[in-house]
Image (cartoon, rainbow, N blue to C red):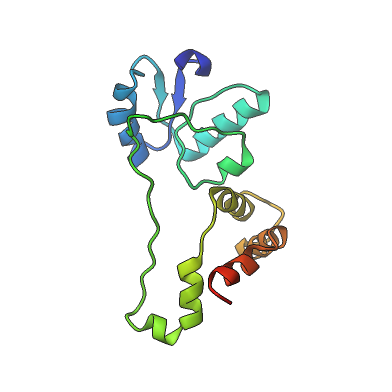
Length: 160
């Protein structure tokens, strides 16, 4: 693997959990000790990613999901058959004990709310990486225009 990526792995901030896991689990498990692991910052890693992809070159970076970069760049995840990066994380919702009684329709919507990775990546990219929109609300509205069935599908899943 190392030769395909100029023997470099570009990381993010030194204090990040992903950096610790990369150093303590990923590198030793997959025998990557001879690679130059560059610990930098998220903006620096993204600049390396952009520079390499603009040139059509390979680059190995540490990146997490969800992230808008998956929508912006031609990224593929390297396999992790040993599970060094752990299981996928989950997002949970919490509310007052009487939330469902007070907001039954919203409760159904939230219970049925899902986004695919691709939907989330494109939404994040529009919200956080586009100069085309004045704010996140405008970007979200534009995303809904580009994904016209999203709300209808959500309503259908909630039984409306």
